Length: 323
View 1 (cartoon, helix red, strand yellow):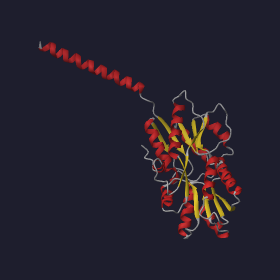
View 2 (cartoon, one colour):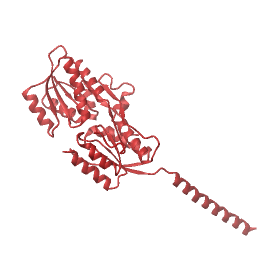
View 3 (tube, rainbow, N blue to C red):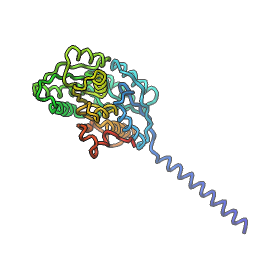
View 4 (tube, helix red, strand yellow):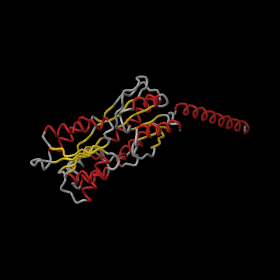
């Protein structure tokens, strides 16, 4: 009797072990494959990428993605960026999310890179590429953004005066930034506003701003990207020029604080969180050979002022958790 019980227990243990082994194999077969991707953007340390990083974190957790946010400075040329992208491919990246620092000359480079890896573009514009190389992009409606920014400026408290306006145009090597500037200028010129100077970012924006505004001072400064708007904010604070009205595009904590205390009159906030999240999803779909092949997409932007920044829904955009 005792021997029968020992035998029965032994058989039971073996059965449990076999079941556990089979279950482990089954779960292993059904577990999603883990992909490794790289993120290559201009000036990776810029606070303008903070919300973008939170979107990456959230999407990578959900889709079992391991990502490397490559440390970069200011790319001096598209060729320099190409070398950085090529290095990530050589190091084993299954896919890459990148912001092109220029538009002209990118078609050939993207065609070459697209043969070796999956690419997803964010916040930029590309030249026409080979249709056999599937490369999609996620951005914002630049014409609508530029128009919305211009309309905010037209509501200035100084609107009854003859306004002198200066524009920090950011990186005008990017086609999307050119569209943003053109749409803004159209609104201002149709309202007969005087644009005193337009300054592109050529590597030393603070110095260039000081020189330009010393030669011809302005009543309003408009900055077309996060870094330029931060520079303008610090410049006005450091020089005691709080009487100059400030408008622009960005979403860093520094800019949100400056909006809250009234230094920035109006802020255009692009949903960088959703941009990053969608980029990861699109790349995952390509890597996993999903039938839902993503195309080009646009994310929303929001016009934020001190009087609506804590409204329902707006806090989620300004302060995403990344969960």
